[in-house]
Length: 220
Length: 265
Image 1 (cartoon, chains in turn yellow, purple):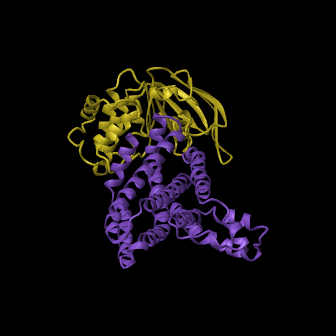
Image 2 (cartoon, helix red, strand yellow):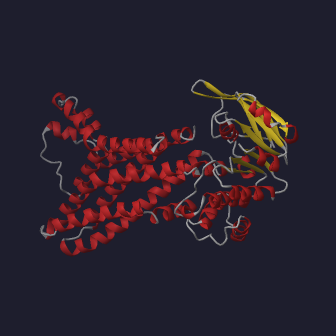
Image 3 (cartoon, one colour):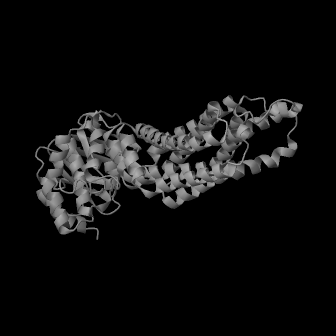
């Protein structure tokens, strides 16, 4: 589903990603793990062609990421998003749904029920708690019904109940390829089949059962 | 269409837009009040000229802030990346965002000026062509400064930077440009006045004022000295089109370059 080869991304003469190779197969749930500033968000942005790469190739479902045909197959939730604060939850979903084609009102209702925001659909999203906002973002992702879900720290800043809610929603999605960045090893173990560990601009991929927390601690 | 609908909901539910509108309404009404004692025959031309002069100070600043903060919010709220990842390339987002901002600001102002012209119609002899010239001049002003604001919104990384850039842009067009021209004025002669004229009218406020004054019949191009005749040799319509191309389209092109760069870190 994702093939990255020789990806190098520099920022002010500093190589954030250095000749990165990564393959994520269809149906895999891969966590992107690494220290703060290791380049997790940079890698995600490069995959999505939001950042220009110095060299390397990225293919999403066999399509070069510089083309736009892959966009229908991907749903992306950035870190610390806020959506449109003056729009209600339902209006936010409807707007993002309209980017995908004709708006399906039944589907909007379905996804809002799934993330338990149907009752709060008429509230402006600025009145939502952090957890509700995160679930609203997930509702938008669910609406797209994309094959590949990319999430940048989806549980960052959430309380334990909020985290549990988000994880439950993500666990309930069968047959999806997922790439998510996370600092929480416990949620990685609950959700993912693989771990891509990013350090010094290089990536090492593990099966989740082979990944040891001590790997992260070695450099402490 | 969904962009326009979304933009309208976002703006109309926020206080900033209505403060923007209230300021224009209050300033316009004060101009109407001060113009009501003018003679009916020529009152409309003077009223429209005064209204445009008031707009020349308020509208650029309001459009710069309004458009640039709208783009900055898209960046800060991370909605821009969500849109760009899901729909087309960044320039398509920019195009739709520009269209939405332009359409909303222009529509609201046009509606207001149509309301304002009703009492003016009872006070002065009405000429539709004068009113349409005024509307055109104001809409070009709105277009250019909205587009510059959108560019600044993409170019700046923080709100504080953006406030500084907006104030500088307004200061540049309202004062700095004229100060620079004043400094070269002593060396303007008959031989080089054409170049000076071109640079002078490359300022949208000058070009639009010239267009409006000639359209309203307030500025006669007869009985001018040779140098002044050469200075005013460009057609007002051409000058307005030139300003739209240089500032409006230039800012749009610059935004397209920045729209991608703006997402980097």
